[in-house]
Image 1 (tube, rainbow, N blue to C red):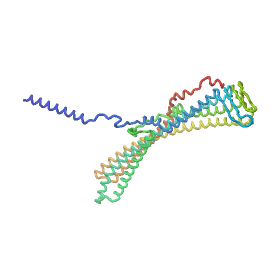
Image 2: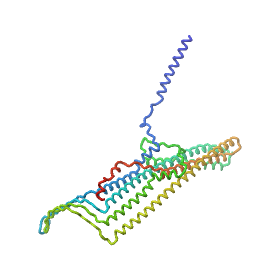
Image 3: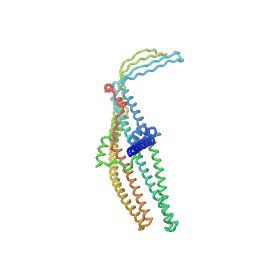
Image 4: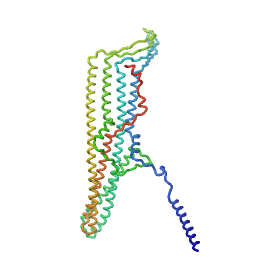
Length: 449
């Protein structure tokens, strides 16, 4: 009997286990595919998408391609030019039909270095536009990251406001009952009502601002349907380097401000060489076929020879232009120096501001801990009957204000980090094969030289 009873219990337990496993399996749904719940983008993924789709980046690309096309045009100046003009028409007068044909090919052999200067100038412009493209990308990334920090701040302020409304709702109802029973004076109700309405107004304000900034951020990034942005905790931020020299060194190695300064000077120097080239004679080899049939002309001939042009004297017009260009080059040098100094001052300013704000964050964190302890003590005293409601509410409001100051300090610090990285941590991306294909053939320059 005992054995059969034992086996009966085992069979019953096994049946219950099988049924439970089957029920649990039916209750747990299959894993959802990304198409069903959408995809979650990290901040880095969102920045990468913005760098592809943002209008500012596309505009910079368009400027670069324009200058690349002009560079190809400058290279074409080294090659022969084929021209032709044909006129065949009926006419009044002595000859009823006139005919004129003039075709030829011309190869420049000496222009005083003008074509080389034009090519080098356009090459410097292309390099400048490549750097401006990188500047546009850095600016777009910085704007996305600043907007992201502002969204995180409004999200955190909304959460703080929600907690404040929740806490004050309880106090509002409690004080209202006490005032109605005439245990507390009426001004206590008006005070809690004002605080309660202020908390609700702050909640609505931060919630609406958060929704607006998030929509702007999504539009800037280009987030589509079924996608969302991963919002990290506000307090997750990187720390500063030990000194400003780290950022200054990185900026001097990578930032386009330094390279653009030199490229602008190069561009103006080649413009000056273009002007100087006009002091020399311009020579070309030419081959032409000329045919003309009119009342007084009837020719058909081929001409091969040398074509020359020389501006011998223009009463100082060209010399004045060359002197003006020299002064413009000097101006560009000093303008570049001022830009570099201003840029480095901005790095130092952002670094020292970030250090000060980092300490401000530590101060607000200590203030939060202090006011949390005061709030706990006020609650204990209220329960013990040692304190009134006003002191408890004052300590709670002081705690919420400390939290808000902390959020503001963290946001300010994150924005300063973005600005500092924008000024210093510049990485130049490799250029496309299209840009590399614009390198001129070596023998083309030899024609001019």
